[in-house]
Length: 304
Image 1 (tube, rainbow, N blue to C red):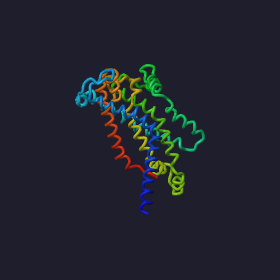
Image 2 (spheres, rainbow, N blue to C red):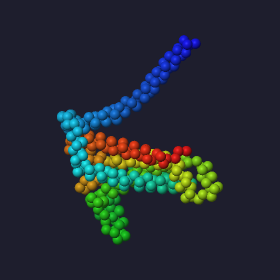
Image 3 (tube, rainbow, N blue to C red):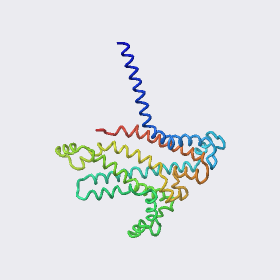
Image 4 (cartoon, rainbow, N blue to C red):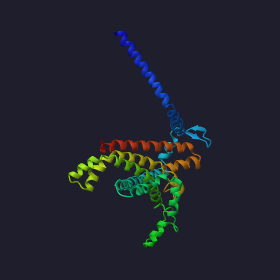
């Protein structure tokens, strides 16, 4: 009996190793892609952040923590980080609230609602370059539609992209419009997955539309809202295209948020080491913010 047990145990270990090897073989293409396009660039960026790097990507001198110390004492970097957090604050709540409003409307069983669902999700099919170009014309100081509307109601036009006061807000409006589509689709899918039995039971108990929305829809949608909030925050931190097209980081650096600052340092000024240090700090900031979201936000999530 002992020999049979030992033999079966060895056979089980052998089968586990075999299955593990087969699993690794199936995962190998994904691991190679992640290694080449994710892990290797991250390691290389971390390495560059401690070195002086030439324009060709060649390491010149080891400088240790010099780049990080310069960032800590840089007024421009502090301004860039403040602008980044303001940008996140402008965009994330607005895009989620608007997308949720559209999703609630589109979840109703009304005639022709499919047309509105298509309209609400249409921004998903617009590229960053195309969307930013559209708003570039809308924000034009003299020919733009927005200023013409303001002038029609007797309000002076706004220097949307040429004023330090308004430029970041204008880019935020563009970003909100671009992100509504994907957030709408995710939230609509979440609402449609809420059990119809819950609504029927609430109706029998005499709950009205707003009571069902607050007591059933929102709580049951909390896992989806939690997910959407996380990806919205990360997406806002990584915004680049619309800033490059609309303002180029200006005026006076008011829209020079961290990602665009990294781009300028690396590809405009050739300071790859300094830009790599900024990229590492951005990674740590996003990591900390996401960790806080999980620690705080997940406690308020109601799973079915």
